[in-house]
Figure (cartoon, one colour):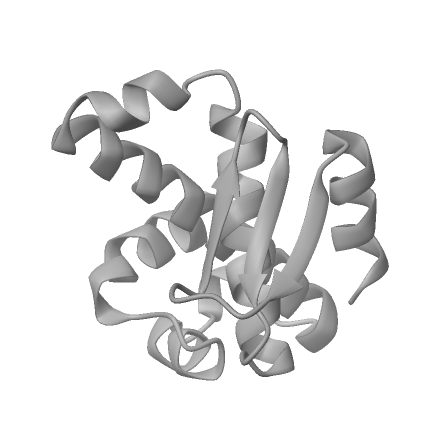
Length: 129
C-alpha cells in the first residue's frame, strides 16, 4: 500500500479490516471502519479501499442520508467513486509524467479497471485537472 493512502487512513483515523466478505468492501461510519474482502487481489484491494475512503472522507456524518433514498445513495456512491478516480488519476500523472489533458481516458480507465459507468467522472476529472 502506498504512503499517500496510509496518510489518508491516518488523517481520517479509519481502521481497515480484511476478512471473508460477500461484498468487495464497505464502510461503517459508527465504527469508522472499512471492511474489505480478503479474496481481492492487490489492485482490487487498493481500488475498493480508495472507494471506501471516499465514503469516510466525504460522508462520515451523513450515514442516515445514505439510507434515506436511492437518490441519496446514488449521489454518495458517485462521490466515493469520484474520490477514488481522482486519486488514481493523480497517481497516474505522477507515475507517467504525462500532460493531464493529453491522457487517453479510455486507456487510463482500462489500466485502472474503471467501469464504463464512470466514464463521465473520468472525463470531468481530466477536464478540470
